[in-house]
Amino acid sequence: MGTYWKKNQQRLAPWLFLAPGIAMFALYVIIPIFQSMNISFYEWDGLGDRTWVGMNNYVELMDDEAFYTSLKNNVIWLVLYMLAIPAGLFVALFLNQTVRGIRIYKSLFFFPFVISQVVVGLVFSWFYDPSFGLLNIALMSLGFEAIPVLADETWVTYGIIAAGLWPQTAYCMILYLTGLNAVDPEQIEAARLDNAKGLKMLWYVVLPQLKPATFIAVVVTVIGALRSFDLVSIMTDGGPWGSSRVLAFYMYEQAFGEYGFRMGYGAAIAVILFLIMMVYISAFLFKMYRDEKGR
Amino acid sequence: MFPTPIEKTSPASQWIYKVALPIALILWLLPLLAVAMTSVRSAGDINAGNYWGWPTSFNLMANYTAIFENTPIGQYIMNSFKVTIPTVIGAVALSCMTGFALGVYKFKANLLLFFMFVAGNFVPFQILMVPVRDLTLNMGLYNTISGLALFHIAFQTGFCTLFMRNFIKALPFELIEAARVEGVSEIRIFWFVVIPLMRPAIAALSVLIFTFIWNDYFWATVLTQGAETQPITAGLYSLNGQWVAAWHLVSAGSIVAALPPVLMFFLMQKHFIAGLTLGAVK
Image (tube, rainbow over all chains, first blue to last red; front, top):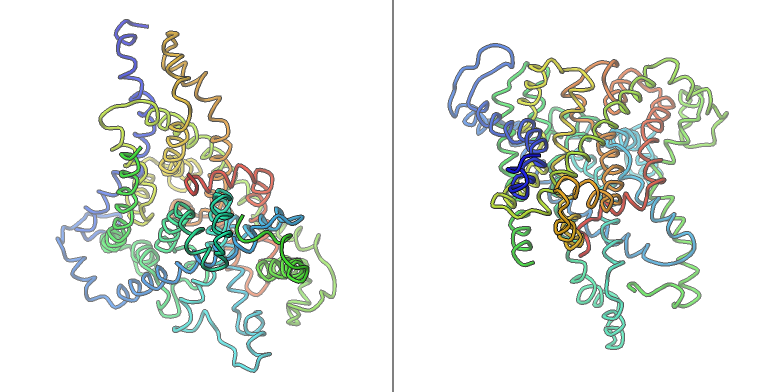
């Protein structure tokens, strides 16, 4: 090997190791973000010529009923998905014991997260089925009327979110179980001597120590809520009458849907979704930056 | 330990806990148990609306053989493996290198590049969809397994780099310094000093990525079509369209689709959880 390499290898080596990763990531992730932004200023069917339309796609969005429905549903998703965090904590506290066989229980509780959302969606569509689904059998045996959850405009989004909360709660549970493992036993004992118990202990002694777990749980839950595409596509295909659309799904529908390929309009929706996500990504990066500097 | 260990509580609450545990589990997994039950029912049961009673006959073999014989589910599963395994190898290999570069060397753009990988890993898929589909079309890889796998490798590199870099950063740096003093080249340090220490991280990432990619549905629908190339997630969706009201078949198909990641999880549980919870404790 040449003397130049020998002299400079500590300066060159990182770039050598980074090159393939950066090339792939730039090609498939970084550059497409900017391309999408660019496409959002065009009218384009994906095949023929593009026509520059400036801000027209965005202006059209402002008047698009379906866009507002999707946006509203995204907000509902974001808010209700957060329930996975306390629910996960609750399950974790329930399972944080050392009785026989508890390890098996923990892994079985985690099960829903491992299986595909396609399967989760199918399972729940079936659970909600108006004629023989378990939900409606239960409702009717209690004397209520059956609700065709997935065909009802008022219930459909909540029904899909409930399906999504199932694996998401499992995810938060595992984060908290790991967090609880690392809680300092001495602090707990000291607090016990001071007569701290139950909820007070949880709030003042345990939760502060679970902060890293809570942070990760919030991050993955927000991302999960904004990425909600699979369940909507499988359970309702956006219906009934588009009432369960979310931005991620509406974008797909516009770009590749049955109504023709409107790539520019779809890209504009994606840009809006990206900007919403960017708020969270920036907060995450900011926290990471602070942690890095604090080391 | 919090909450109070159950052994230290009254016999009554110990007893309640022991009973509550299996009940809670059954309720939690009820949807899945129902699917498992349905997958062994006969078509007669389904038509008669017997979804929740005892099955009139157990058709385990018949139903599962039927889905493999009458549908391309075997092909879908093969496709899933063909996409998933190269992705795991590719993304882990790339991120071993990027993680090493970002975790070991100090240079100006280090943190900026690291943040690029982290941020990219969180972006919504839809902002990538149109250009990535276009790129794949132009490369002649649309509706091929390699086209799908290439995208997955690139995208997963973001998450894997985050993971690997933090893992390497926590390794004892003295090992690398000592090797440098000995005059070992940087490439040999990577291969002979760092890689052996990264084995647990590699194992954790592999199971995690396997599950993520196996369960991917969105990209499968964007980049592939038809039974020749589609993985099981997309396949299950189209089969669901064909099997209207044949819930015993839908259930059997769902179970088959869920099996590989579930097995992976049970075999590699420790690694899986270590991977998922990275950063949840510090």
